[in-house]
Structures are given as structure tokens and as C-alpha cells.
Length: 214
Picture (cartoon, rainbow, N blue to C red):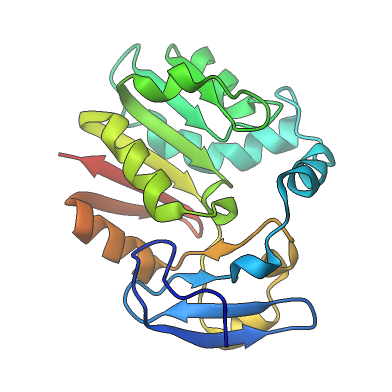
């Protein structure tokens, strides 16, 4: 019996076995299609931060900037001049924020480990970004709802996360092997979420979603 009784995104109870490997179990929600890891496999905060400290993503790293450009390019095409934004879960080297500021926008930073200034979560923004973040969230339903509430009407929420395709692909997917990755979204999941919040959804490439608050 799994210790996950409700989906951390939609609070649904229809969680069914999806995959199991030698380290963890994975469940899929019958309502929103989120694939999640039961809480007993989650790292504690110290071990989680230790994993993040191993990352070496400097703001001036050209390869990392190309990677982030998959979100920055479509996002910038939709922003008004000098827009105000938030980079949520920016990590120790907020490269995306630097890229957006170079394009003339202002970007506040929030990260629970590296930039834990709660005041950033008390303001309103014209855009919010979360790159390689949502797969780490223990309570994605609560966090995404909070961020959506910070977005001004007409604002855009830019998210980058790799997407679940099907059970066969998941079984051989390297993305699930990161011990800090505990929630896995599919395009179906984002369509469900957009419907719940009245968001306009646009997918770019394999792993970028833009959601507008009308």
C-alpha cells in the first residue's frame, strides 16, 4: 500500500501504479495524469540541497544559456517593454534572470535554498518563470496556485520541465533517476491544469509551456 493517498497536484485519490524501479515507486493520477513519487522516497532538506550544490550552472555559461534560451526566446517575444518578473526556483546561479534583465526587464529572485527572501512572493508580476523546478515540488498544487495568484491579468507563466510520454518511455527515462525529481508532468497534465485555472496554454518544443492569465 502506497503512503501517497492523494495527488499532490489535484488532490485526487485515483493514484495507480505506473512504474517501479530498484529505488522508488511511481504513481499516476487518474484525474490530472501527474506521475508522482510517494513521500517516503523524498529526500530531507539537507540531502536535497546537497544534490543541488553539485550543479554547476553559472550565469555566464554559454551552454547553460543556450539551454535556457528554449524558454527565454518564446517568452521574450510576448513581454511588453521593461516588464516585471519573478524567477522562481532560480538556484545559486540565476542565469535566466540575467538573460531577461539584459533584454531590459526586471527580475526578482526566489529560491527556498539560495534566495529565500519571502518578500518576493508578496508582489505581483507580469511574468513568472520556473525552469527545471516543478519536478522538485513536494506540493505542486499549492505552489503553482500561489504563483498563479502573483501573476497580473495578461501575464505569462513560463515553465520548463521534461514531459512524460508513456509508460514504456518512462521506464528508460534518465529524468526519473534524479533523486530530487518527485513530480513528472505530461502535456495532458498541463492541459488539465490550464483548464482548472482558465489559462491559455501554448507549448514550445519538447519541454516548454507558456500559460497566460487572461
